[in-house]
Amino acid sequence: MSSVAEIVRLQSAIQGRASRWMPVIVALQGAESMALEQLQRISVYRAPYTGNDARDKREATMGAFKNTFVETMPASRLVNHLFSGVGEGLDYFRAIFNNTHGGRDQTQFQPQYAPAPEVNAFRDIRNRFERTLAEVVHNLDLLKRAIGSETKVLPTDHVRNAFAVMLLSPILYPPSANPDADKMALAMEWHMWLFFLTYVLVEVQLDVSRERAHMTPLVDMTALFARMIQLLPAVAGMVRIPDQLRNLNQFRQDWEQGRINQHNLSVRGTLDLPLAVSFPPGVKKWMAASGGGSTEIAKNAQRYVSAYEARI
Image (cartoon, rainbow, N blue to C red; front, side, top):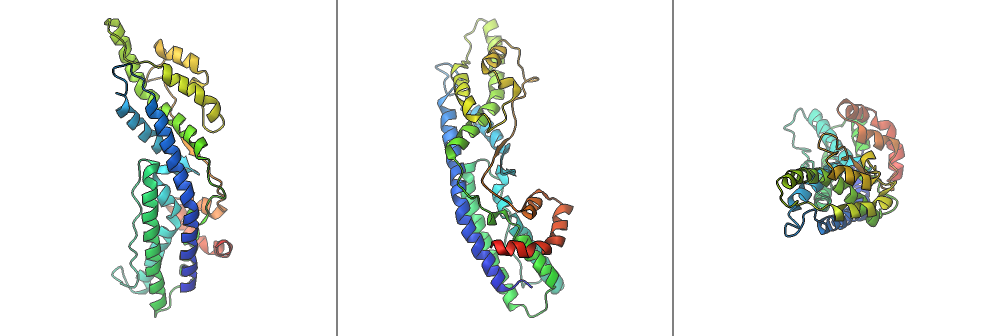
């Protein structure tokens, strides 16, 4: 049966590994800041309207972030992914105590843990990470007290399964090296520009109407395309380059001559930021599971225990 000593070791391991995840989170935050800084330097509007595209850039960066993944984990839910096994394990232990003491009103163990809300930018992740870590440590303290003071015999297989599920938490498997923030910044910036292009297209199409009415066009794509051409060699091999953008000069010409519209523009995609993480097969399976898959893993988690305990 999982003892207080095992929970203590797990708690210590989570705190230690969390300190190794923090530089990764800081690097992601820094990369995003560098990408945003470059994004704000370039406006697609002519003077005196330069900078009026700030709202569209804000919408584009939010869309880009929602379609960014870190080690296949949605960036908006990164904190919950890192602590996912702990959360499931706490729920599992609560079910064990509920069963042992005849219902949900038992007071032996009622974890005070809730998943962190989704975030809209990497700059919001650090605070969520620190708060969630504090909640997890607090709830493991509650669990230690509950197990240490328990007078009834807990179902051994279920207790060890619950503990094994906690050992599947990705927080326990930090990257072996910190990511390159400069390279990630370039990839993030390219990804943001792709989402921003859709907003620019609307203004380009409005410019066609303005020119027909003998009005001065508002959009000037020169600086934007110069930056994208500059980025292209740096991001090659890091991000997916849409077919329409492989020849940026041709893309710009087609764009400005009206051959590209909202119906045939397909440059948006996803950005996957890989880290030097080697997740064990059980952890990968846990991260990918949903519904019945999670239940299956919980039922069969005992066979993972010895291997994962050795890693802690």
